[in-house]
Image 1: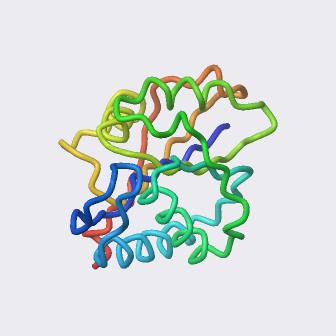
Image 2 (image 1 turned 90 degrees about the horizontal axis):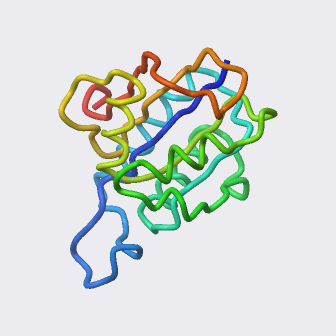
Image 3 (image 1 turned 90 degrees about the vertical axis):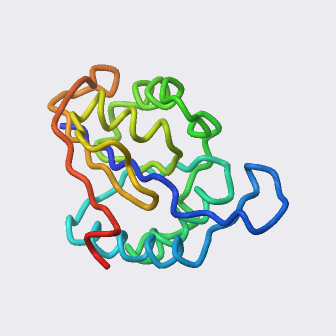
Length: 160
């Protein structure tokens, strides 16, 4: 069994004139990331590795969530392939992970998150909202074998 918790970064701010990679989180994003993390913590996952897109809003979401889950923020590995808006780089990255990792946590972006939730997890809503976590549980022994499974999601609007 391989478990992948995929998080879409929290709500970002457009208040500052910065590059896409440097866009910070909005106040609501900070709050929502903490809410979702507290709910995710009830699942009692043991994450073998945590990966984040290099974009500030994704990395900052990871720091907030890990702090609320009780995982050292020093354990986040910045992965360029997660700065993907379509999903193909992300799937390639995940399928290349070593067999020794059973449960991973990633932080990335839309439209990739929605696309992957729909194609891999059968997600039926139109969009994965910001700060949401999607939980995939694949009945395989190798990451290279991941295919369609059922997913569950944790949405901040259901926790407010």
